[in-house]
Each structure stands twice: as C-alpha cells, then as structure tokens.
Length: 346
Image (cartoon, rainbow, N blue to C red; front, side, top):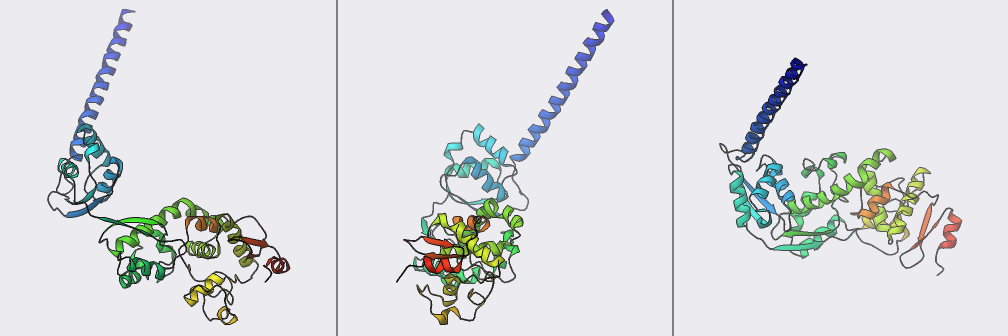
C-alpha cells in the first residue's frame, strides 16, 4: 500500500516536472517570438514605404495597413505592444514615410507623433454613370486628368494583377461597369491610379459578398452579370422593380428574343435621348440590342449594388415586357398584347 502511494507520488511529481518543462519551453519560445516580432522587417536592405492612415482608423485597421505594407512582422504583436504601452488612443491619422529598417517602437513613436495631414476632397459618382461621364465629372471638379483616367481605365490589364476578378474579363476589355458608383474621400493630389483602385476595391467587396457564389449557380460569367446589371440600372427607376427587370431580360434571352433595351442604343449614340427614332434602333453596333440577340459585349454603365444583386437574383416571374407607366414605375406583362394595352394612352 505504501509502495503504491510512493509510485503515485513519483508519477505526480514527474507529471508536474514535465508540465513545468513544457511551460518553460513554451514561455521561452513565446518570449523569443514576441521579441522577434518587435524587430525591423529588413534592417540590412531597407526600403522606404509611403503609408496613409485614414482618419478614425482602429488599432486593428492600422496594424493591417502596416502588415500589408510589409512594415511589421505580426499584426497581433503590434496590437499587444500598443496596448501594453498605452498608446492606442494616441495613434494619429495622416501620411507617413516609413522604412523597413524601423523596429516596432520606432514605428509606433512616429504614429504617436503624427504624420503629414493632407487636405481631403470628396466626390460622388452617381449610379448609372459611364466611364466617359465619370472622367468628365472628375476632371471638371479638378480631381483628375481626364485623358489619364480614360487611358488607365480603357484596359483591364492595368489593374488585373491587383484585382484578380478582372482576369475573368475578355482581353483588352475596359473597366466600364466595374468602377463602383459611390461617394469617396481622397487626399488632394491623389493619382488617377489610386482613385480607380479605390473604386475597383469597392466593386470587389460587392463581388465577393453578393456575386461570386451566384455566378456558378446561374451559369453566368462575371461580365454577363455586370452587363445585365448595367442595363437594369439604366432602365430602372425603383429599386423594388430591378429583380423584375432582371427576370424580363433573362426570360427574353431564354426564349431567343432580342432585349430591345433603349439604354443600350443610348450607349451607342453617346447621348440619352428620351425617344429613339427608328433609325436609332437600326444603328449598326454589337451594343444595339434591337438588332442583336442576347446581352451586349460588355456593361453600358456602372451599376449600383441593388442592380448588381438583382442581376444574380432575378424575380421568379414569367414577364417578357415592361413599360414606364407611372412616376418612375413600370407595368410588367407576359404578352405583347398586354404590353400594348399597358402603354400610356397619348
């Protein structure tokens, strides 16, 4: 009995000893890992990095910005260091010239001191704007060089390495339809590349959230989805009707009917005529959906989120026609006879 107790005691002491060793080794490892995380990324071959910390950025946002710019080794260690040094509330927004030979203490010190606070400007791109309209508007507001903006957005290859979703588009395709319409805040003097990049980034968020998983389900390409969304954007006035419009166009495609969208002809004409002439509807262009079946080759404008969502979530209806009959609202019908009856009487 006594021997059994002694064996249990020895086993317990041995287990405690092993646990102590494990904790000791783990502690040493974690301590070394933490110390390593405080060091500069590349002290032997440093490079300067221009970093912009937006106003109202959280510690988490700042840590991610620094990590993405390869200025810190671990965002978690940055957050621990900021917390233990009680500097979280003192980190300032602004523009910083940092270097890869700066250790964590130096970087935090500079963020506490504050960077160059450049003036900012806001601009709004309305839903349904074309590239040409965007460039014209931003040029008039003194934000961009119009020719530079058009040149950069004329071929997706200029941005597809940064935004991989663009690789799904056709070779040489422009960014028409993919610069997300919204209100943006930028620093004065921001380059055209950065502005386009911000707009593509906003589109990417919608793509990943609302479109990506639906494309395979619907057997639809990204270009087809955005092209459909752009037509819905230009034809629609009321958000609640957009899924119905999406359904109408998809139903017509399924039946081999031409879309006959006035918006696509307006895109060809370069103007938004309220009433198209017969000659307009016969204009020779792959974008003219009065003479070509299916969707046009690409988007005709930049759709907003409601239209993008509607394109991949069409209403479950049999409608084939719609006509403007109210204050921005449409009447949807299944047959051409019903469509004629629904047209407002002159």
